[in-house]
Length: 486
Ligand code: ADP
Picture 1 (tube, rainbow, N blue to C red):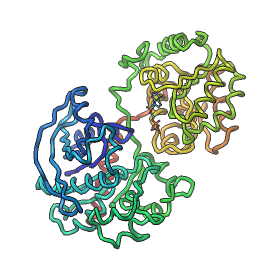
Picture 2 (picture 1 turned 120 degrees about the vertical axis):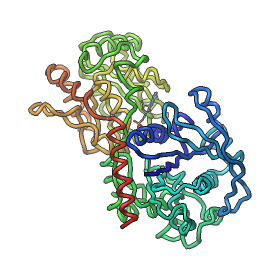
Picture 3 (picture 1 turned 120 degrees about the horizontal axis):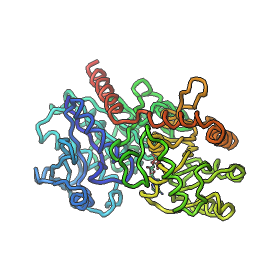
Picture 4 (picture 1 turned 180 degrees about the vertical axis):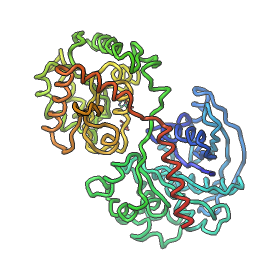
């Protein structure tokens, strides 16, 4: 099966968020499962800086390829590389006007950049003489790809047997622009219609892919259901409901070699599921470094997050004065909205022996918190997949979450009869339920030590691998192929 992934970000070439991690990791696993996968991305300015840092080479392949469909004289060149440590080819679309800003999303015109990138990707596939089975777009930046394949490129021999797949990593970003860009894109005006790209008087690129891709997925099964409701649908729930038969959820994996408590050099003491005792060394050293009283018997509750509304901080801020009545300690690491930053600073002032607020971005400290905490809170309002709870599980730090999106798909309530489950949580978005879940976790930690050990083992044994995820993507591709044949 011949697959092209088209993504604006790919780790380690250029990364802004989680999209880059997924497209950097998933193709390696797909390749192991026999898929002939290549990646197409822009040659952002940052790529050459990263080539030294991460040790990859880029070689010139083609020069000055035109984009006749677009209203522009700009051409593109192509460079070739590989994902480090794999044989996955990466084709880089180069154009000095569109892709040479220091910041990936700060070019001259984001709409034109993404149109140019999407169209150039198809022209490149033609130039390569390739006839892909699957073209796989990620998020709004490459969302015009399925629109082109089903309209302007309809009778193009390269794509006569191509099925299209869209992965939505975050429905919050849709690529909404002025309708004038339709003309620049060389797309037919009839697409400016409620059954096309039109969206409240503008055009919406993600909506285009939701309507035109053969199959769609998002990064967890629960979020795939949630986004068809008004509450989570970001005004696209109606369109997503139309496509609900072709909408799936596939959980992301995490990189097991980088996030491994047995080998992680960023933590104080390494441990694995057979030696959970050593986790305590991490806790006591962390308490010391943070200036909290060193005591391995006091529950240490951690939180690492962007400090934004999405993360359920309004709930947390309503209950922390009650939580502080318990014998416990709380450490937060995050940056974001000033009101939350200030809230956590004032909480630390009220409870200097119990609370530490680290209002900064610090990847090393994050690992120490994942390893050293007993529990990890994540009461998100919505969560497409969520990484925090996955890293916590991997490090035997018991998650306390709101059961939404990927949190509902990775964390299961501990049951002291069946001994199954790897965490605690609540459904209804309301503060008392969060308080109850934290209290329940503290009860097990303090009173039910045997159970607590069991929860930690269950957490560490949860399968969060990319292998599992990649097998599901192979099935998704098969569905996309069947759909087109059908
Ligand atoms: P989101 O992508 O919505 O921010 P996720 O849970 O999917 O949420 O991913 C967040 C990632 O960013 C996690 O790996 C978390 O450890 C990391 N992170 C968030 N804030 C910080 C911070 N202040 N310092 C270090 N890492 C952070």
